[in-house]
Image (tube, rainbow, N blue to C red; front, side, top):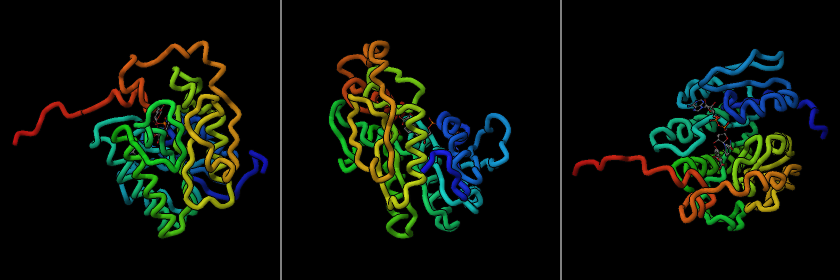
Length: 275
Ligand code: NAI
Ligand code: 15L
């Protein structure tokens, strides 16, 4: 299919005001009939003719139910995107994911592309070769919340036939920032390819794939890529000379484990509760 072919569908992009929402807004808009943009924060710029906006807090079940009305497919980016105290993560990443799937069931939405994260397996050693079939090892509450989202996707496929592609995204930045990203980088162009492939693949069931560019040093398998037709075209290798020496202090969990900086966050509790 031509990447700019329009699908006669209404797609919803949550987290549209965020970093990756801004990267995906234009290509998604070119690929569907109507694009509904949602975030709890204001969007940048005005709306194009094919766009509409519906602000929504994912923690508000009724608002999410209204948000899904008339939506054929969702790219779900909204939520807390970094390791944080549990109480900050739960409303959007746990309750919000439940609200989204339940609203999708009620609205007859057919497919959800869920922005999961490499932090579902961030507790593995750097260099360990992983596939989506390997046992999860979340590196914190954030990674654990993404694992919950993957579980929700599975439940709603098994019980209600809502398809999902869970993307365990690596480091989706304009350029690789450090040595770790020589393995984990997902270029913005490859992110766009990956998300469009996940939306357009004819039948996906419930699929989990890693989202990473064609980095020679990547740790993650390409399982599932052929099924959705994702072919990465970028590589972090070109940045080796400039970022290869930028790394975490030797001997720390941040340097040793795949999750990198998130292993340096927490515990968040500063006081023990009195007995
Ligand atoms: P971001 O933090 O820039 O964007 C997330 C958006 O979600 C924000 O605009 C925020 O306002 C919105 N949001 C947060 N709580 C909300 C709530 N309760 N209700 C409604 N909206 C809410 O994150 P980014 O980098 O754009 O990432 C997008 C998604 O991709 C996130 O789910 C993140 O976990 C995931 N991801 C991102 C990676 C990256 O390298 N940027 C890597 C792996 C996963
Ligand atoms: C993520 O899941 C985060 O959302 C992003 O901010 C990066 O930290 C990324 O993973 C990463 O692991 O580099």
